[in-house]
Image (cartoon, rainbow over all chains, first blue to last red; front, side, top):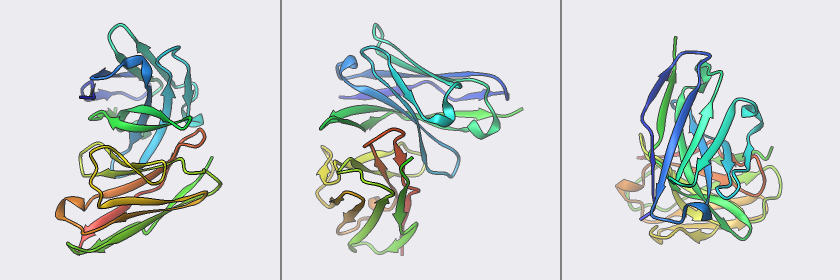
Length: 121
Length: 107
């Protein structure tokens, strides 16, 4: 069965970086994109970006441009998302979600369990 | 960016009721819309994709309709496990955007 298992909770100081991982299993890794979505405490869902597992190409939401880097390791079926220059507003649960292509567009079908990133001095 | 507006923001209903949630896009998105259910402390769960296609394993009490800019999610015969927050999301163009959510509560 499809599983996306994310790394554990992190506590970081403002200005630091965090790298969250998402290990995929139960499907062919390079056949599906990976979404990253975040959710601040008590708030709604926010799209961070998406990565193509074949060539590593990415598309990021404009507000994260320059601070977010998504990468993948096809040998271990792990996706990574790094956020730099953290500020308190980045405190959120970060989710990875598999992007399945249907009719030429990709929507998220399976989700990881989420990783809480807390930014606090 | 495409704005997704859900209504209502919250909704009270009783077990056994039928409820409808609407989602409006600020511009044309064809049928590239997905609906999610999220329970407190849990990851979202995909229910409907392509506006009206049921995700594998999701019960048929959930149904979706619409195209262009206006969409609806209908849940029939509400059960206690259906009380949650529901989100729509467009995946027509980047950046992909979400509605603000509709919180479905027990009356």
